[in-house]
Image (tube, rainbow, N blue to C red; front, side, top):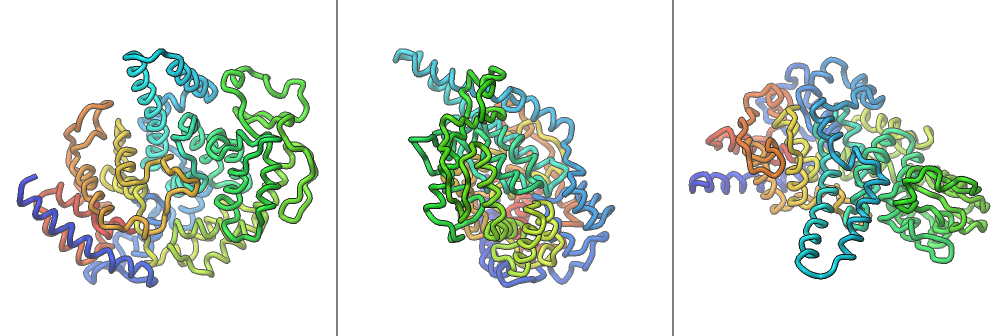
Length: 526
């Protein structure tokens, strides 16, 4: 980079970094107008409150979202999303996802191939051949994880129902799994596509049951090894503490141990035998089979349990459903889930009134996620100009892509996962089961914004691997014309502070202008 350009980068980055403390304080102080006095109250029918609402509703704005919102109005727009009215992808993107082996290969076959690959490597004699096989196995494992991440990222960038896409990401993080543990990477794409996505707007109880039976969760939190006589309480504990009730919700260690007993025998069919239709359940009473999930009564503690003050009679698989019903109908569950949603969508410290309204909706509707989200998104808090949150890396990458390329499909999504990894939030990369932190303070360090400046240049320059075929290097592409776009004029410009406008005025090229906008505090807060 030329010396003059480097100097401008340093100067502008310093200016933008200097805005962070003030903006963070503004976000905590309550509703404030962040735009300058030169901005009119409405731009082509959109008010600042509309823009604030839309930036909470989806990962980031694009032209299609604005057009739909203008046509329908807020309530009809929201209800369409909650009903799944536009859960579609551009044909090129859908074909790209469907071509991935983690999507088009039966899960039992993927798992069997994974186990066979590992076993072949273990059985090889030491020598150059085994070293080559080790590298091939490592690449195979990376490819599985990267493909799973690409599935989610392509949905997030191009999904027509942006509220649902945010909820899919939210629940993936809430019910977090770690790809590098055992065969979890094999199950990750299935976890997103067939476990989280179909239940993202349904009943919370059904979502819990779906994650409970998913191979990814059963392996990650060790319930596949939780059997009578050799128990493991990892999943029982996290199911209550992280997924449903939260810390300090009144349950005891005894409740954790009783739930562990309830969950004994809930595990996986062996990979080879899972491919044989009818292997489990034929002539064996009490066996429950769903895909790779198997409840085996021979491995279940069938004694009575006392859980959350209630007696659960030994009845096999039915005990699990009864325990999940007990958990999800606790007032603490309604409060915990409502707080988690509000902290993600609205503010790090949501108002007590909003939380109470959401929890009441949760209890009244028996945990209907769509109803709870509707209460949240139609509240005054959802369109407030204050309480702004700093985007985590996922939101930054997806919103940058939606603004810069505005629906244009990319043939290579691999760089998106690489960028997330370098910014410290790789999909399926959280080792601990608590998911990535989503509060502003976790992502507002100067090092994080400096890294975002680098990726803003990559995205905003058009010189990246997004349009490359496979592992080819950067392919020249037209520099996105953000400054001249109607999307920028209508939905971004009205929200900019004087400091960001001053920074943009220092840009010497369209690439620099794009870089300064995408790395600005105004864009990085939503």
